[in-house]
Image 1 (cartoon, rainbow, N blue to C red):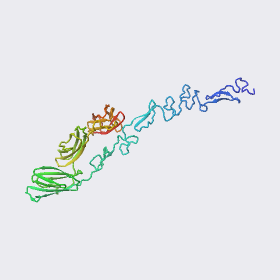
Image 2: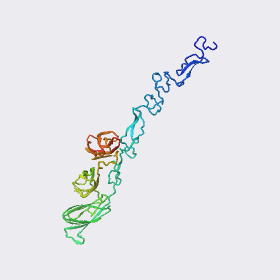
Image 3: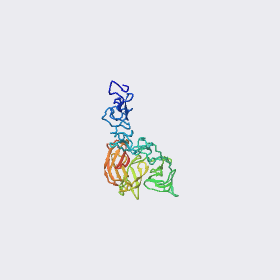
Length: 446
């Protein structure tokens, strides 16, 4: 009895098996002091409620011994579904991630535990744009306000929306007319008049546009005109300087001048307005370029005087069948004789097969703005699947205009109907099978 832990029970003595009521220990036995103690295991002090040998801190279900999977990184996902159970920052398929590619967005872990994103749509990360979004990762769809009139002093070629800020240099061209009864020292009959017209405050060179009836003869130098006219004749001359400033002198049918009743003409500005509807580039050596304009103001009907490459001339409003080059137009209204002059450049489309590399894309649209039916031409530097889409400024696809395989360096042309599309600014986006993109702004205005 001096060594028996319980002299009334033959099973209780030092070294005898016992249960210390701790599921995390093994080989429980009575020690020399008759205390029941087991050998500690890895879960001792941590716990293992279901006694499956997986400690409480990593057991995915410590109340079910049948579940022995662990969550080693403590991110809440068991090792059987966790893409990396040693990295708490990597979760399960469908979780957000970062694929390290700034050209993608909405990156997630795939079923194969690979982090992948979708190609980012056109956005605007330029703080100077009106649609700036700091979360966008490109500047493919930026919209800038500014002066869109090429004739203005502050013309901004990057502006897509005119904000009314255009400024124009003041026209200072002035002129005077002197009526005499002699020409080059010769006394004229009373039924003839001679006029000396001089100009000042202009930017040269000057151009002259005449409208004459009856007997009118003239000679002109850099800053003056000498005119000989019969009394029953009439004439008007519109003088335009290099800045587009206009001065008009008219003669009535009785031999008196008509310049505000003073003989001195004041500064005048052309009331005519020529707007460009669209320019269609010439295909390679195809002579199929086009210029389409609109005319307002003044008193119609209008006359048109076109000049262009070589000996090109035309007197119609809109031009077709054009070669690439500069074209100059002077429009005159029949009511006042006022004129306005404009110049346009008709480009030539790149010759098929001349794109510099396989990632290059050529894209052209006309007319722009589109009022009903638009035509777009495109060329890809590599063959394979291609798609051309019309998207809004939020990146939402409005319409898929083309989706098919293409040949490399082949020019394609398609038309589309804009009648069901709301007025506004859109993006025409061409994408090849490698994700290379080309875009062009398009305005729909019914």
